[in-house]
Length: 253
Image 1: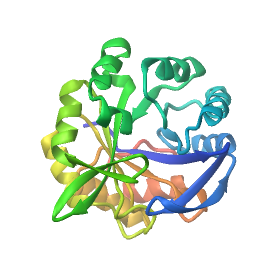
Image 2: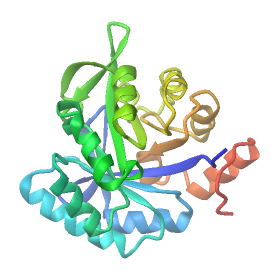
Image 3: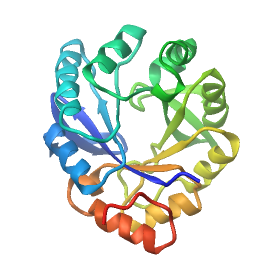
Image 4: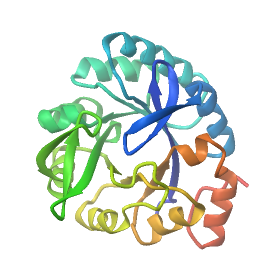
C-alpha cells in the first residue's frame, strides 16, 4: 500500500495566495513561491497551485509563477485553473509543472480528459471535482463552484477515470474552509467506486480530521490550505501524529 500523502493547496489570485470559506470571502495568505518552498522544507509530499481567476493577463502571471516554483521545489506539484485546451497544458508543463488539474473544462468537454491522457499520460491528468449536496445528492459545479450541473459526483468521477484520469481531486463545497472535517462518507464511496487515487479536499481543521479522512474516508491523499497557510498545523507535527496513529506516511522527522 502506498503511503498517504499530505498536500498543501495554494489558491493564487493576482500573484498572491488567498484562502476563502465556502469558495468566497478570500483573504491573503502570502507569496505562493515562498509558501511552496516552506512546505517542501517541512515535508509536504506534493503541492497544488490553482489560478482561481485565470483571466488572460492572470494566465501570464500564473505561468511565470509556475516557472519560479519549479526551480524552487524538489517535490511534485500540480497546477490548475482556466485550462481549456492542450496548448494550456503544454505551456504549464513546459514551465515545470508535474501534473495538470482540470475541472470545468472537463465537465463541459469530457473528451479533453482523453486528449490529455493520450498526449501526456494519465499520470499527468488530475480531474478536480467541486460538489455539494443538493436534494440528497452530490451535484458537480462549474466555474469555481458558481454554476450547478446535472452531473452527479460518483457517475462523473467514474467517467473521468474511464476516460483516462490518473487521480480525482474531490472538494466538498459544503465543507470548504469551515474546518469541521472532510466529507468522509462521500470519499469512502468514491474510493470504493474508483480504481485510481482519490485526493480529499475541504474541511481540515485539526489533526484528527486527517486521521479520519484516511481511516474513514479511505482517501489516498489529503489536501488542505488555511490550516497550513496560517500556521495552525505544522506538517512535521501532523506526520508524526499520523505515524503515531498507525497511518503510513512518508516521514519527515
